[in-house]
Image 1 (cartoon, rainbow, N blue to C red):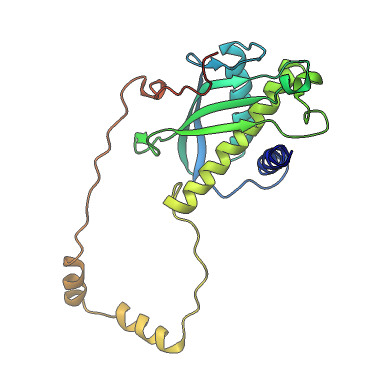
Image 2: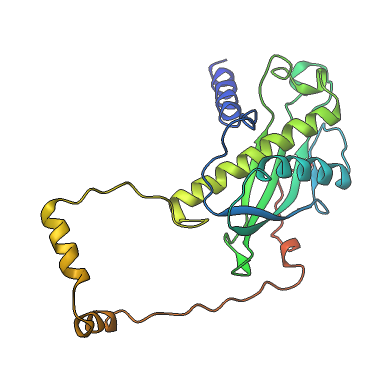
Length: 240
């Protein structure tokens, strides 16, 4: 019983952190991000046990719409592309007893592409597991109360939110999407004098300082054709 309560608590906590009902609020800070291509593939997905069946086209339509809905709000100065691969899913269906009516799950691989650099920001792809939002209608299994279309819509909206959370984390940890705004710094009078002295340095002294840090150049390599579709395989569900 204690293990069951702990499991339910963890699922509720996960769902609470993935509330997608914030589209009427200001978007999260994603710097210079603007959505370019929104590519969803589902050609190698696995349908989990005791699941309703959904087609490749149905998943592509549901996820593409949810991603456009969330990321179309961003109006940054640079284009980034999202590549999403559906790896596995469970769409809960009515079952007896209740333990045979699981909640719905979706497993994705996500890759973010920098259009200007012509390459991926993350390698390997980020694997994201999406649970449906817990409510009075889903606590005992959404298959009892929801149609397949509603389940897919809810999972897709949660997926878009979790992709956004992943990108916000990478922005904080790795500086994705341009330089983050730093805190305002107020200089003391002494520091002001030092800054003025540095500004008034002669060209000869500035040249000597610059010689110690020569500029470097970066080489941009365009991704091969179709590379966004080539992702490692994941086996999310055991064979039955």
